[in-house]
Length: 466
Image 1 (cartoon, helix red, strand yellow):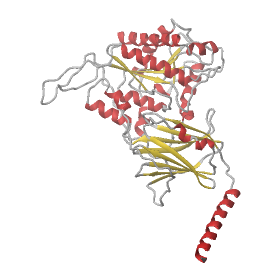
Image 2 (tube, one colour; image 1 turned 180 degrees about the vertical axis):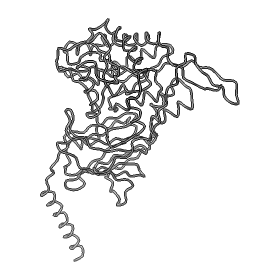
Image 3 (tube, one colour; image 1 turned 90 degrees about the vertical axis):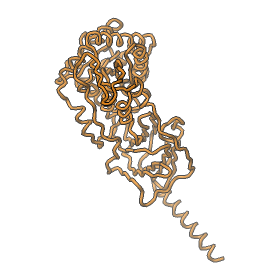
Image 4 (cartoon, helix red, strand yellow; image 1 turned 135 degrees about the vertical axis):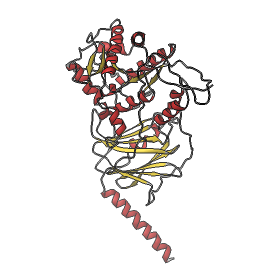
């Protein structure tokens, strides 16, 4: 009788201590927003707070899950509702579970469908956002590496696109309780640690030198080689996305939505053209760093890169369409310098881990000797600008140049099209009009076709066996 009573009083005492600790403790930070951005390349979880977020991440296996302990916060409705934002179609995340692990510490458990490589990092306030904690869920098999392997091993007009659309196999399981973290956890990342590598290093492939005829190599032991006419590949880059909405119009229109709509229409029109196909750097509302857009185009061995924007200016009366190419030196005008600075700051708003170092990427984005590519970009820009000028007033009647980071592919002619100023009420209305979007798309396509009429695409070596 005495032993059960002792156990009872011990339990009562411990409960009282926990209640007292909870009553004494007051969290000094609050999670004010939570967002989920699913994509085929990766899924991003973002928590926003009024102060810097202190955290610890643990990666667990069997079953696969990520545990994040968030300190100095209490469980609130923002955190409780995170799981409601997870889509059933999310390629990586099965569900999110949150609970008050102990006073002042909230535990977030991400149950996974497959093995992943996470990276976690904090972001300082930028744009309209306060302090953010970003958890990126990347697949173990990097989509760009899959893309490269398929391109090298098979010759199919749609192989590269299919590579992006492949999802990892689902390993369904459920566990309604929060997982304890073992003392010897596999991987632990704290706010003072370097994030995990997000992807293996990728060596970009260089486009072949100029040649007008298609080159077909013979297989060493088989003379029966089928010849293919290479398709022209055009990378279309819808500006902004996810955490980065881009410019906001007077009535609340978001640049990221308008650019995606126009880009999808342009892709559809290009795909209808014989011998041409288009690929999108993003096909949904998620963030891609500027360097990621460049690398995607290069992995696809794109012949052209067209970035679509609808920017704003300090003066709401500013109007008209513009086309930009890269400048190795200074910007050609004050407005070009202003717009380039704004676009290059997209990574700060969208959120990039500056601790992830990639020497190949750094080499790719260096201002290399790009004279020939820039000259081709200017020719492309002039052709596109000429046709856009037939449907809209031009902000400048010549192609402008500035140091846009997204145009820095050393071997792909690249332009940035400012379709119109979303900060101008009249142009904002037109940008949201389907008929005007269709006219823009046809104008850009006409300019691309005119460019190729006098600048045939470079031949690239392909090999396929019958």
